[in-house]
Every structure is written in C-alpha cells, then in structure tokens.
Image (cartoon, rainbow over all chains, first blue to last red; front, side, top):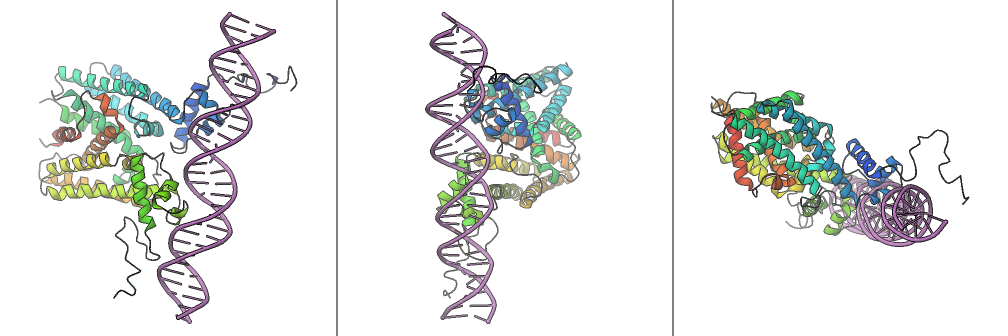
Amino acid sequence: MNSQTATTKSEPAGCLSTKPYHHGDLHHQCLCAARQLLEENNIASLSLRAVAKKIGVSHTAPYRHFKDKESLLAGIAAIGFRELTTQIAQAVEMHSGDPAAQLLEAGHRYVQMVIENPQCVQLMFGGILPCDDTYPELRESGDLAFDRLKMIIEEGQSMGIFKKAEIELMALTLWSSIHGLSLLFISGSLDEAVAAPVDVHPLTTAVTHLLLDGLKSG
Amino acid sequence: MNSQTATTKSEPAGCLSTKPYHHGDLHHQCLCAARQLLEENNIASLSLRAVAKKIGVSHTAPYRHFKDKESLLAGIAAIGFRELTTQIAQAVEMHSGDPAAQLLEAGHRYVQMVIENPQCVQLMFGGILPCDDTYPELRESGDLAFDRLKMIIEEGQSMGIFKKAEIELMALTLWSSIHGLSLLFISGSLDEAVAAPVDVHPLTTAVTHLLLDGLKSG
DNA sequence: ACATTAATGTATACAGTGCAAACATTGCAG
DNA sequence: CTGCAATGTTTGCACTGTATACATTAATGT
C-alpha cells in the first residue's frame, strides 16, 4: 500500500472523530450493545456477530475481551444483578426506619427492573449460565441483594412489627413471591390466567400487603 | 382379526395429536428424545439434528412433524404445562375437603416438578416461546392450572378458613411464591444466598405456612 | 387388485453461528 | 527507532436451522 496519509485517519469530513481503529473500549461497548440487542429480541437469537456488527468491528473482535459467548452473557447478567442490588439499596434508604415501606418499595423496584429488562432477567435466572463459581461476580451480587433483604426484616423484627420467625425463611418467602410475580408477569402467563388486564403496580402492592399480613407480629 | 390391524397398530397413546395416517410415531419420539436431551444439557445446546440422530432418522425428518425448532419446543412446553396441571389436580383430590392441605400438597408437587424438569420449566416460563397465541395449547394448560388454584381458595373461603380477599389476588400470591421459590431453587441462586444447604421440602412447607398465615381469616 | 396420491423420510444445499489460528495495525517501553 | 504487547481483521472449520428436490411407503378410489 501507499505509505503515509491514506491509510491513517484521513477522514476529515463527516464522521465522528472517535474511531482510532483501536476502538475506545470495546469491552464496555460489547456489553452495552449486547444488552440492547438482547432486549430487542431474546437470548436465543443474540449472536456475537450481531453485537460486533452493531459496534462496527469485525465479528471476532469481541473475543479479545470475552473468552466466549457465555462470558459475555455472564457480564450482562452481572450488570443486572448489580442493578437489582442498587434498586433494593435505594429502596432502603428511601424509607429509612420503616421496614414495611422498604419492603414495598423494594418490591416495586424489583418488579420494575424485571419488566424493563425481561431478557436480562431471564439470563440472570434462566439457568443459561452455570451455577458453579465460574463467574464469581454473579453470586456476590445476588448475595448482596439477599443480605439487604434480610437486614430489612431484621430491623422489622427488632422494631416489633414483624413476627420473630426464621429470618432467612421470611426473606425467602418475600423474595420468592416478588420474584415469582415478576417472572410470571414477563412470561405472559398472567395475561390469560387472570381475567382482567393486569396492572403490575397495584398488584405488587397487594401481594406485598398480603405477605406482610403473614409476617406481622401478633 | 389381524389381516388389517396387524400393520396398522394403533399408536401408543402419544403425548400430542394423533396421527390417523401413516404409522410411525416420529412426532411422539421427537418430543420424548428432545425432552430428554433438553434435560441432559440445556435449551441453548439442544439441536434438532441431535434429536434426529438420537432417534435414528435424517436430520430433516422432524420437519415433517414440526414447522420449526420453536414448534418442537412449544410441544415440549405444552407437555410440561399439562403435567403441572395434573399434579395440582392430584393434590386436590388427594386432600378432598381440606383446602390448606391441598395448597400445601400442590406446592410440593409444583416444586418437585420444577426440580425434576428444570430445563423444561425454563422453557415454559423462560420467555423463549412467544407470549401471543402462536401456540394456543400453551395458554390453555396454564389457564387450567390457575383455575384449579382459584377453586381451592374459593372452597377455603366458603369454609371460612381463608379470609375473603380478592380470590385472584390470593391465588396469584400463592402461585408467585411457589413459582418463585422453585425457580430460585433451580437457578442456583439459593445455594449461596441462604447459608445452610437448602432442602426444598421443608422450605416449601415453611413458605406455604407463612403464606397461609397471611391468608387465614380473622 | 392396482394405480394414484398424500404422508412421510432422505439428500443436498445454503446462510448464519461460535470459535480457533494466522495475520495486521496500533500504542507504548526500551 | 526498534521491539513488543494489546488490540482488531481475515480466513477457515464444524455445526446449526431450514428450504428445496427427491424417494418411499401407507391409504384410498376405482
């Protein structure tokens, strides 16, 4: 080829500047693009090649940043777990000193997160990724979220507004219920099981209240 | 007595629609083989070609019985839904006249079913299959199961042992909780969130009891 | 009974996929 | 400036879903 100018950044007109052939940070962009494509379709039809094309790199470029496709998926799932934990944390500090309100708020945020990122959630809990310690970051985030949930209940107990059953059991019941409700919702199973058109927010509120009735002391 | 019926052996009580013509139950065998392969690995790595090979036919043979791969998956999911409905029905007739026991039994069977067929359940609720009416049989089965659940609660209410909240709401809470518990269990999320090694049966019992506390009248 | 036909299974082909290996381009360290 | 490590590209292979054309066989009308 010719030596000097033509090969390098000789694209003065038009295009955005940031395309130095060594792409900015492909790692991050892969995650973003993949997450977007994931939600646009579903897990099955997400391809690494499509991700690469969306970013504008060759279809093997992502392999410089992710060992394989599963590794990319794990990265997306980790983001999801972190977001979930964040949501719960925000719910806690939003209603400081009111465990019942914290649980309700956390439930709403959990459901909201699931509804807004259904495919990501399916990825997080859908058994696609291995359960072992292949991707440690996954478990840590999940752990954190559950810990926060238990802390809420603990506070409620010490305040005397929750009965003193096993904490993990109560937390698990709550988590299961909200988790199940969210997943049933995005799976579409509710739309025809329940007669009326389903509105999540009041539904979540009602379910949580029903659960809180069972958790109340006395 | 055998001149005609010898060759035309009525097909062996297959899982899906009967094939009045041409004998040979490839349809049924595809479903069985696919289901088996599905549980041996996971959804992502289930291939039609592997199914065909397992049965011993050419890799395009299944297309005579299933429009495409998704259609096969829908068939498997339908089997799963029907099995779920059956389990709940059996729980009901097992504890006739005792709604609380029916719910508990149904919960145990639900969880058991999920644990024994995790990949199938992921398929049923994992958002792989379209939610619309592309596969009507899917929705019908799910409907039936939910109807049975509501009937249990209705009976409990008329017997005066459940509070008289909205039936669909109570049913939904119960379903969500058991569903969520099952899915969390097979997703592996529980193994590290909960400290001790998780044993499902007592856990299901405990969760159900906690819920029943919230449902009780008074 | 036999030819016709529809139902069923096969052979072949093709585009899309994940991924490995060899190669090219860049930014940086000596 | 030279060499190197990080990053991106090209090429290639095995495998997948599935469309098409072909072969076979069971069911049916005459």
